[in-house]
Image (cartoon, rainbow, N blue to C red; front, side, top):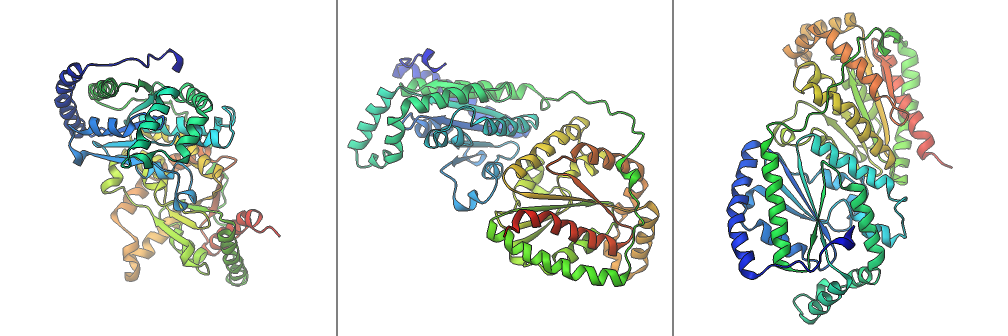
Length: 490
């Protein structure tokens, strides 16, 4: 592919000035239009060392309002970043609606520099290619405009630029061991680039390969491509819509088989809970030693006992390695990003535990039932959630998901108890009563969720919740049973 590129393409100074003078005000106006339309833009710059990424980014952004963009220079991951899934550091840097995120280097490092350094092949990189395609597709489905540039120069041109940089004390630092090593293995890097372009140039996130020998040609090519992408994005009034899946009429539910009345006596509860809590504390410390991250998800009916259950689960655990993440309706910046963005941010680092009180399943539960998400959005979310969880597990996260199930009669009893007890008034709201009126709708949504997102790597565990003693003991026992074979090794 790259051998067909005309690296001699060039532009005169007058041609460049005339073209850029015309493009600059158009780019500035389109930035304002995108901001007004709430359309986020993701610009990715990859390319050879000394291919001009920095100067190209600088020139491209000159006419734009700096309040509406942010530039991210991506270096090898820090220790903090290495302790989290590979895509964490990119999800947390995504631009908000109506703004532009510029990445100087990006999530492609693994299939470019790292591949060559580690003697990898195209086949070795397939899981990473898939992760990248999945990431970019999820963003594009949510309306993000993705524009990717690869700046290409020949080995001879790179050598010439390195020599020029090394002669100037102000720039000689740019040519270090890493850059010289890349130049020495230019042909291997070239193959990695070719494979990357083939594997990750998609209709929703295509690559634009830019002949970068001539600075003026390079700048104009990038500016013209970006303006065309801006204008194309503004032509659509809504993000690309995936075809809706016609939901079959549900005749049975996984919840039909749950016996919510399973109970445990107080004596057995007292006898069984404390040893389990002690064992869980021991396993938590082993998680830290083994650098094993743990994510525990709590979902269930209103008044199903999630809060009290979390307190018993964490009672003997070390709070320094634990965070409980309460999830409510999205607020502020959470509304201006992909809905998974706010769940990527609090993911635990290796060796720590995060407990989500409600979670990303709100998209297919309350957002579905209450109409906060469009049908195509919550239908698409089943796939996105499965992909998200698969990525976590692939990165070594122990993922445990609980659905707390109670009968409709027990829920009513607990609602009334909360109404009658002044110290518990804060636990019952008008929204709880409103949700109860839509019990059947939530039952359907929960049934679909359990069937479509219970996977071999992230199965749902249903907790029979009418009896809180039983629910608490079972939850702690399940967590112990899931962690023990992972971290308790000799």
